[in-house]
Image 1 (cartoon, rainbow, N blue to C red):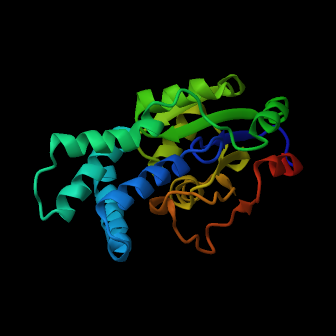
Image 2 (cartoon, helix red, strand yellow):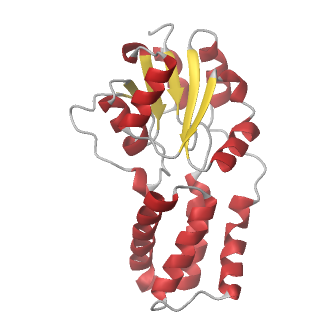
Length: 229
């Protein structure tokens, strides 16, 4: 059992459901634009477009809308996307863009309440500032965190800068999240300790094989944190 630690939490798909909402939009989009035999290829194309757009444009619903439009254009031999097609994309996106609340992962609220009594809790999430801030506020758990940090990307430098700016001891600082690519691998390389809590709907672009030098505590559910912290 570790005591008096700094625990840094990822947000999307660690504290609340997120990517499953994007997957539902993608399912509707593929139902519309691809025949069953073409579905796998269309999804692979969308993945490539999302990967490229995330580098230049970032993350969030607005970038996702652009990726869907880019995918539709490429599927149609670079024909310009019509206003009617953009309206249909917006209709698919409505459950994602119009939501006013978030669905917490089971056990998150009670677990954070207990952890906040004996540890220093921080939140670190990447994406669009306004979009992520709205989700943080809607979660109603933001009061547990001594700091909320929204960044464009999570890299080794991100973690080094955060620990340096806050004067954190890496040996007593843990990054907790569901993404091997953003939460675990770069945090470990920055010298932090890590807790990996897999999620069934982690975004495919956040998958990464963790090598033997990426030693991390792996749990199966969020409340299991209380066994270790």
